[in-house]
Length: 329
Image: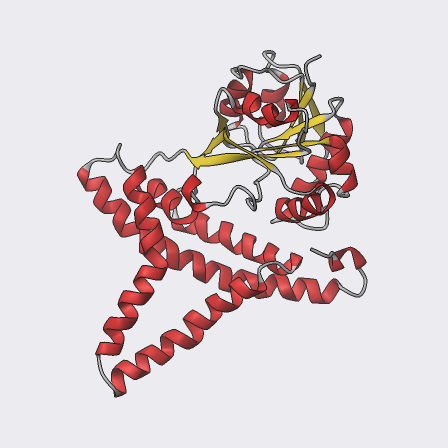
């Protein structure tokens, strides 16, 4: 008997982009048994667009004020299938996305969680540079430890229940906490690299700054990646000023050495990815993309350094009254 799967997604004011996701779901080689969208209180035509789409067995649940975590939990509770496949608004799914996600569940020693993958779907030189700077490629990850984004993942509904669902107290980085809890409950995840969700990177520096500020604030709220954030603060607030002083009072060679080492550490990987992703760009756009990489990288680092302490402050103010914040990795 074929495995039954419910695809879930949360939305908020996605009227401008939701049709692309709906069309890609309708074009799946393995069609979902049901699709459940939870709308967090859209004020545009999102709900009307969803309700008028007839090419899928689709249900729409309106839950005003629900954040992403609560929206996903609402959808999963309502789902009839024993397997949940999660995606996000604003993506375009490969036609084999669902079929590839389900393959590991069909093996005798079936998986409880399957990680899909995601790749940029850029529309400008800036967005090509953005994808190359901030998104890992397949060669950058270890499938054994890769933690999936909820824009491309499938799991047993029973595993979701065992993990306590998505953390509704968290507005960003919620899928990482959910991943950690899932891994604690069910062990290693299977990996389906061909289950690809294509999504469009942020289109300008302002939108990117806001996104990475929110991500870092989520890290602070969830007490994630302390070491990673400490290294960033140490690099910009201690190592860089020290290097500037040494170059001024000792020798300019300190500046050259620091520029070479720092440039390699910050920009080598993004430029390596960029060369592999810019085939469709004109020579002029290739130059533009190459110029955007340093600005994107530094903007992201600044956004993280601003957002992280805001999240830490939020967490410390609530630890005594909200015991769920003391989750154990």
